[in-house]
Image 1 (tube, helix red, strand yellow):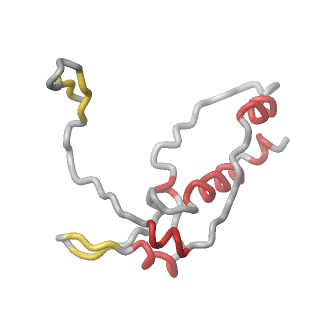
Image 2 (image 1 turned 120 degrees about the vertical axis):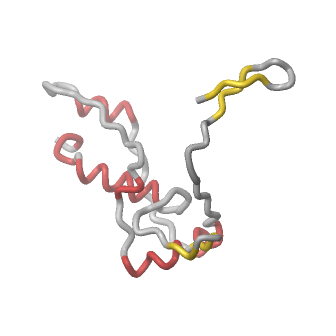
Length: 117
């Protein structure tokens, strides 16, 4: 990260450009998609369920969405075109309306033995 001064001498952190970042507008796809709601659990309820365990760890969910596969028949819905060709995601990108609910459902499934004990 680089810090620069703006015109009023405020320090502004900036990102060092190391490559391409893809940003796709999925608003039309999201409007046509049926919404799959999965409510987030309350943090105090989750912490209460964790009491009494011998070990705790922190799992970083960075790039978590990118670990979840998109069904092959739905991959073409994520197609985008750029100067280098036409591409489609094989794993969930940010911006799709059901991605957070799908990710939360997946995490609850993985950790159900801890959270539902």
